[in-house]
Image 1 (cartoon, one colour):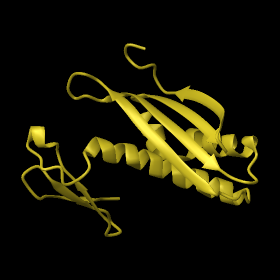
Image 2 (image 1 turned 60 degrees about the vertical axis):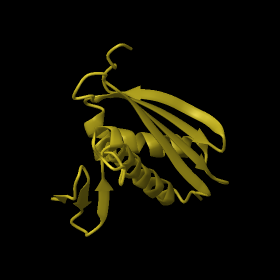
Image 3 (image 1 turned 90 degrees about the horizontal axis):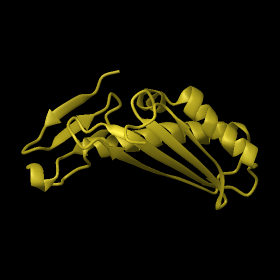
Image 4 (image 1 turned 180 degrees about the vertical axis):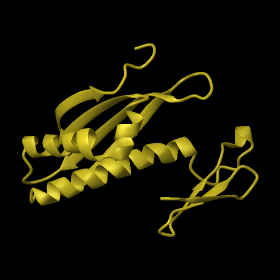
Length: 152
């Protein structure tokens, strides 16, 4: 797999996937950007959610679960000093379903986190991943993976 990334100026870049899809990235105005795209670190968190979200949907569909609504929130704490890596990443799954059991939803999330999502697997080697799973407004479980964050 290879992507192409092109400098657009003054701090913006356009990434193009092998399938022809584009992502625009830019820096904040206070560091010379014009805020015309997402920050690369924001794209990383979105990629994590997209990767695991695709897994969860696929697994639940195979279980013949109806997904009425599915969303995720991902946020992270970064180191104060450069390279300002993520130390902790929090990932919250919010699923609404008229027929899913708590066991099915927990299993789908666990399979994604522990077996299928390549981005989760890479990130948990460097950052603590705190995962919360909600079904129909009720928290089912909360677990952590990866190293303990500095200062935790």
